[in-house]
Image (cartoon, rainbow, N blue to C red; front, side):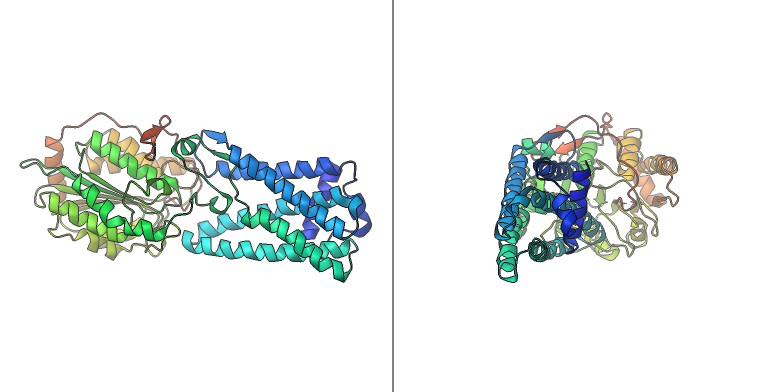
Length: 497
């Protein structure tokens, strides 16, 4: 154990370009203990990667053979880099101590870069964060060149040998870090069954490489096909048409909510065939139109042309992250997608012909900032938070947000009245936030009118209400529902929506 901690300390000094202490460096990991320490540190790196992967994939999890092979290749390359370093420095007897130091340094570097990547993706839009991470990857390779040069000099190599030693070592480590295909040692069972994969470069967004041009080029046809599948309006019946929009494709929680909206309103609220979903998620690229402002505008125009604009009701459900300046995040790296402001959302709803009766539900932080732009005599507006408040419940390990759980899964399975469901959800959310110790509650908002509530009452009176539809996580790629009813979303992420 002492040798393990000594190697970690030496690895930390190596990363700081200080190098291990001369005399102590030779005994930090004695030769007879070197192999055990080296492989223990490599195993710790594997466990760290698996732990982080468990926050990306939804359970149940499964060990990936590709991930284990990728780890073994990294171990072999790291050992080869260590051998090159001691061989060119003519210090072969220090092979295992040096290998342990480099393994410790690599473990610490992985930990730092993982933490930095999480902070970037939580603090910036995903496309910008991905570009910064790519720059950091190359900066790390350069840093390893300096690390290898400094360590070579500490091992006694002269200037003539230190530079080629450093270059050779850096190339081997760089292959492991930057160019070797890296697969997660742990992945979700549903993802493996549907063919989804994850590599280290995409570990924080869950995306495989996509062709932006092909995806964008396919959108008009994909949206036309979705509109063509809509069921026609029934004369004399107040039909409910639903457009559901999952804006942020970097977290599955938004896709989960939109697909639950589709099931809930199709099966319980007699809207089967009249629900159109727009989703940003790598698993739905080939089957569902993207959630973009352009697609949303076209979708509402197409739905308005299908429905009776004077009789039927259009329900728009939007879920994503929201910002303090009231912009809805629209993300699917590496596609360059625009955020949605309140005025832009209001313009998208002004279809031709314009639906007279509209319900707009915005599930996002600071979503109360959309109320003023959307309210009118024939519109019911519901938001997950006040204009100056965050809402809660998103994240890579979340299945559904607090608002989605309370309003969609609980309240609408108890009542067919949207205003009544909002009142139930607001109380449920307040209780949960108090139980979780949240000091600044989200305070969901509603804006309604007597005319709109009268139309909703007429719709509810003729509605053939179906049975309750409990929330489940969907796996649209395989066409199945993954698992039983999902547990409540974990608490604690104030940027939930």
